[in-house]
Image (tube, rainbow, N blue to C red; front, side, top):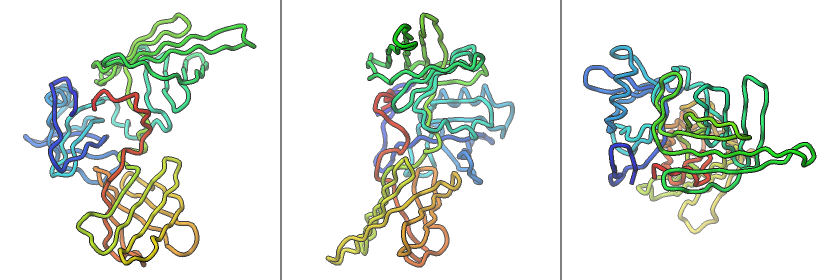
Length: 314
């Protein structure tokens, strides 16, 4: 189930939840969505009244795009945008990916930026060229709020820095007018700030950690596992009682629409897949081992950083 400001929305059979980002536009009564970096636009259904209202408020005319990050239902046509996470802001937002950052929180005045990373909470003061790095504590779960508290010694133990960060699933309006699904409050060394927060690690949207061949394929089973660090493992089972074949190597996302595998050794040539908005993979061009047709379906969790502490919408 998805918890939204408009009530509960269920996932229909055959659908999968996916995080998507791109620009939303409207022509007549229909909506179109262009995934960041993609050349084509998709026909989409907008199932969120809030997203419709914010789009109407932020678009400056028919066909004018508005940047959107949202939870979407994929697996059926058209793509369904259900729960917005960010609406509005600069159209150049597609260029910013916030690598290795699970969540970013920014104060209303822009003078304090907090980045929640895998092992640390980093506090930046852009105007002062100052940065503090706190060891990331386990979050306190308080209904629709998450709280991180930490103390850091400095100056040989003579001084302490104090951090309190709270992020709540409550709408927030940014300085530029953009709408955010998450609000933040922070206190650093006794100084209070409030503002908006957003998910990070955008470069890995919409990749999944595991892909497999469709169940309709009865001659072979392929499984592709992707690691965030850029490594992959590809296994082939031809269902003939012979040992499973395994390849390893590195993967690279050449663009938002192209995923390339570079196996180690000479047994297998590089493989290039087109990447759909729902994370599905389809072979690009001809490959000596797989011909012109190979489809892999998402079967694992989203590849982005996910500590399990940021799960308000689940």
